Image 1 (tube, helix red, strand yellow):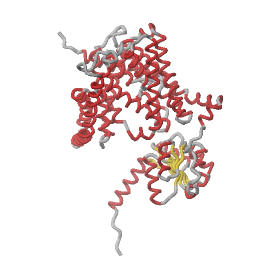
Image 2 (cartoon, rainbow, N blue to C red):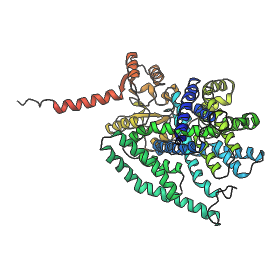
Image 3 (cartoon, rainbow, N blue to C red):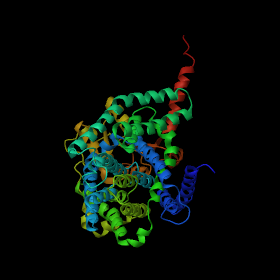
Length: 567
């Protein structure tokens, strides 16, 4: 009798079908994630032909969840979140609440109980960070202010979802599930116990993990073995997730997330992310395939109007709510449209939430199939939604005076105060971008007493600079009105320190039109860009790797140069 090879069969089928259909999805200009989900449908029990082992696939998908959440933790930056907190925090909380209520209302209308309706609404409320990052990167929006707001918004959603994953098990009994808290104690005791366990785990990670994990990685890195380092990273992610579940009753997802956040604080965080990426990607594929195996395509035929309602909530309801919220927070129309497009899909956290609901007896396979249908359709349509943002903005501005007012609304930090010192208004440096590079440049100019005006798209950053007495304006330096407010006409130099390769030429052309004699200094991230910009004579170009080589060479030559001759 041959030995059991169900694990090998499941992995081979999952990877094989995912590769083919992921490739097809990319060729059709849709995220590969759609192909992975379809692969799961094809090898799942709801479709004819080969059926993979669902139990094995589910366990593999748990590893995928751990590594996926570990990756989210590795890339989670509290600084990035704080930079857009005034829009991302209230916006995400209100938008998630509205989307959840909308999903609950639809569920109740269909005759569902309160528990399944709540899980359904929560699953529709959280967008996919993976899908968003790929969409923004493909359009060159990731480093723009609109991109940072969208990412910050989804980070808040991720954190809120993590909290929901913690609180859902103790609430399951009250909501009608089969996982009521042990014993018959009151609900507040169950929730209190859960929060205490989570707090104990977090405290252990912050006190012990923050020291132990970097020390462990340092010891392994000293061996010089790449394989051992990768093994150490993966072992830390999975072992901490497993230990958190066994010792503190914390979900695998939360344990892995905090393992990533703690590891992010070490000097090996970038290497850990790089070394674990292939394995994370592989098991993430298995996660999406396993999710696809739970989908019953018959629901598209049997309940088409329910599917339409789900897609409408995701693409129209969530987007309109986000659009209104961003405009209400006094941000321009283009920012509101970008955030709205970013949220017009659901993904990995929706699957994790719906899966937890299934395991707690709070959700049905029918609801899971509706969530999966909504995810498949919304992810497939998301590139079209993003592509429609700019044409929709232009059409709206042409046909609506109200839209023009929303696009060009008064920004309190778009103008320098009348009390600004005269030294900032003539012969100054206009510094575009106040990131890591911009801050270093500004610090050096301040030490030398060189006057400068900062142009930055982050409103919170400009507000903080003005509190420090630094001249700063909000806006995109590619727009003439913004450079005029920075008094470019009387500036001695324009320094473009922002990593915005798309608008560099427009900024330079605009500055030269307003001040033909202004000197322009700029940075680039690629050799090709630096060569083209130098050839066009736009200004003095600094390329990061080139400057690093020059600095290291100068140090070497100084070390080995002969001592000066003595008379």
